[in-house]
Image 1 (cartoon, rainbow, N blue to C red):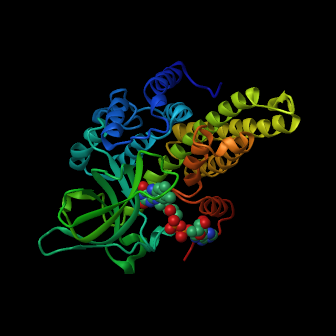
Image 2 (tube, rainbow, N blue to C red):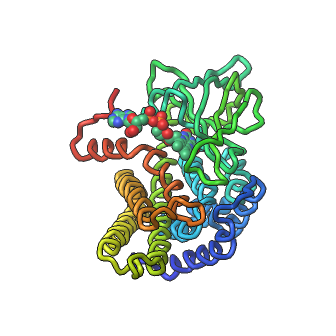
Length: 387
Ligand SMILES: Cc1cc2nc3c(=O)[nH]c(=O)nc-3n(C[C@H](O)[C@H](O)[C@H](O)COP(=O)(O)OP(=O)(O)OC[C@H]3O[C@@H](n4cnc5c(N)ncnc54)[C@H](O)[C@@H]3O)c2cc1C
């Protein structure tokens, strides 16, 4: 494996691999998942420095490169990707904190997020607002009491067992201003007016992750919890999504690798027509597709990560990686099931779970078609996403 990894990069990857084998492998398909277990694992990941990996050292982060970050996520996902959201949400929302939050807000939340003491979620999506985030319907108005009053509903806010402690929440302060009226807030779970329902019927979230629906009926947020200025909410969320898209790509590559590993093992053992099925040319052909697509996805992932490291940010590279790696993950995990035959759909083998966990990746943080339109807009200068 060579992507220009330095000795330091490889050392991080090695630590992640060892942790994954020791602590995460026994939890694959855990029949008794709990918030306590998830938080305990998250704390261990934090103690190794992985939870706030890309965030500044002054807040307890490691200031790691995107290449190192993706290397660690890939290594964990190759064994078990159920706990990666704890890491990705902190780096996503943390990126928005670093770019837009006041020093007081950063001091208040970042060290605890990075130490794994609290976990965040992103609250962007609404019942009527998904791909078109500029149409946010949740409102934020400044009250005569000097606090923000937020009303609306948010959907799909994912975190361990649906129980985040704080939310990066986006709301509209003045509809007539369009995206210039959008503001981001840091909302704590026990702020007055905060209500939530855990939604545990979504396939693809794995045993430890659930979405939460937020019901905000005059939620009261103190003025200091505005992240940046009114009008910067959209940019704050976009800065979180940039790292979110790389994170998804890294998860996809790790899971694809696991699907390849499991399938190689299976076709070397399973016999039909008196021979191991791995001896059949069509089986080898399908496996070759899986391996080649996984390597292509990996190359695009690390190209994107190193471009971001060198340039300080490159939204299109993150889009290419998210789009391609998530689409590849559908095909690779689907092929893994196919080559396991009927057993591919049995919980006795891991490949059905791999496919299930990958199914969401072409939808979250911007669907594949939205990535296509962003890439097309960048290439042509024509904005097909304009309202
Ligand atoms: C497991 C899971 C976890 C999630 N976690 C979070 C979270 O933590 N926080 C959060 O805020 N959200 C979260 N989401 C929400 C997710 O980001 C949205 O589902 C996603 O952005 C798509 O929005 P939507 O579901 O409303 O689909 P829609 O926007 O309604 O899209 C439906 C279809 O229409 C297509 N479409 C829409 N507009 C166009 C267009 N202009 N041109 C062509 N096609 C178009 C889309 O590509 C898609 O195929 C999560 C979702 C899932 C499933």
